[in-house]
Image 1: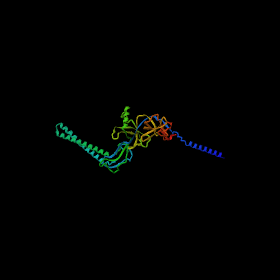
Image 2: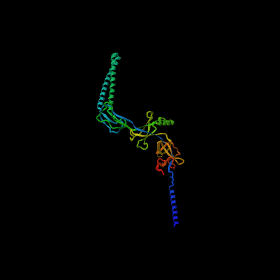
Image 3: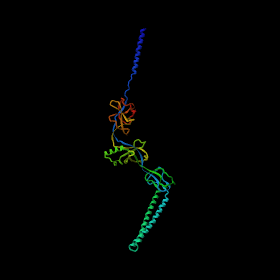
Image 4: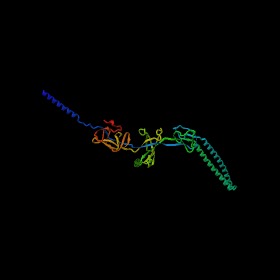
Amino acid sequence: MLAVIKTGRRVATFGLLASLGACQQENTYVPPPPPTVGVAYPIQKTVQPYLEATGNMAAVNSVNLVARVQGFLQEIDYKDGAAVKKGTKLFVIEPEPYKLKVDQAQAALEGAKAQLLNSQIEFNRQQTLVSRQVSTQASFDQARANRDLNQATVDQDQANLQQAQINYGYTRVDAPFDGTVTQHLVSVGELVGTNSPTQLATIYQLEPIWVNFTISERDVQTIRAAMAKHGITTADVVGKVPVEVALQTDRGFPYKGVIDYIAPNVDTSTGTLNVRGVLDNKDFRLLPGYYVRVHLPLRPVDALLVPEEAIGADQSGRYVLIVNAGNVVEQRKVTTGETFEGMRRILSGLTAKDKVIVAGLLQAAPGQKVVPQLQQMTATNSDTDAK
C-alpha cells in the first residue's frame, strides 16, 4: 500500500513538472515578422512644367454710360442685363429742345451765308472799280473788311451748328461696342445731367476677355535667363505663348488663350511683374471679377515623378519614405514641384534608384525593417494597396 502511494506521488510530481515546463514554453516571446510594404522606383519622364499663379478676369472694354446733356430721361430701350450690339439705342434724353437749337443754328448760318454772298459781290464790284480808278481805295478796303467779317460770322455759325448737332446727338445714348448692359441706374422721367454727367448704366464687353496675373521677381529672372539662353525675345512671347485658366470649381484647365501683354517693369511695392492673357469667351462662362487659377507653360524638362500619396509633410517640410539596401525605412527630405496627372515632380532629395514606399505607408516608420515588394509606380497607390 505504501509503495502505491509513493508511486502515485511520483507520477503527480512528474505531471506537475511537465505542466510547468509547458507553461514556460507557451510564454516565450516571438517577435512579429517585418511588415510588407509596396515600393516603386520614381518615374523618369519628360514633362511640360507650368508656372502657377492666381489671376482675376477683366473685361476687355467696360464703359460707364452717362448723360452728357441735361434733360428728362424719355426712353429706356433695353432690358437689364441684355446683350446688345454696337450702335443699339439704349437711352433717350428729351431731344426736342436740342433739335430746336440745331434748327436755330442752321437758320443763323443760312443768314450769315447770305450776308457773306452780298459782301462778296460788293467786294468784287469795288475791286473792279478801283482797277478802273473809278472808286476810292477806302471804299475797296471797307468792302473787303465787310466780306472778311461776314466770312468770320459764317465760320462761327458753322461751329455753333456743329455744337448744336453734337448736343442733339448726345440725347441718344447708344452702345459703343458689342456687350452686356447692367441694370439702369435712373428711371424714365428723371432729370439727368444737371451739374455733371449722370451715370445711366455700365456696359461690359465679355468676348474676348482678359486674365490679369502676376509673376514673382525670382520667376521673372529665371524665365528671362532661359529666354536669353534660347534666343527668345518678348516679341516671341506676346501673342504666341499659351495661357491656361481654370475656375475654382474646374478640374484641369479648360480655358485656353495667349499672352497679349507683359509689363516693362517690376512693381517695386510687390516685387512682381504684371502679365495679361486674352481668351475666347463665346459662351460667357468667364465673367469680369472672377478669381481664377492660371497655368503658364514653360519649356519641357526631364523630371522624377512620384504619387501624391507617397509624399508626407512635417514641420521641416515635405518628405518621402524609402527602403535602403538593408531593407530599413529611411525618411528622405524632398523639394517638390508641379503635379502631372496625379504625380508630383521631385526637384531635389531623390534619385531614380531610390525605392519609394508607395503602399503600406501606415505600417512603415523610419528605422524599421520591412519586407519590400516591388510595384509599378502609379498615381493611384495608397495605403489600401498594402498587403
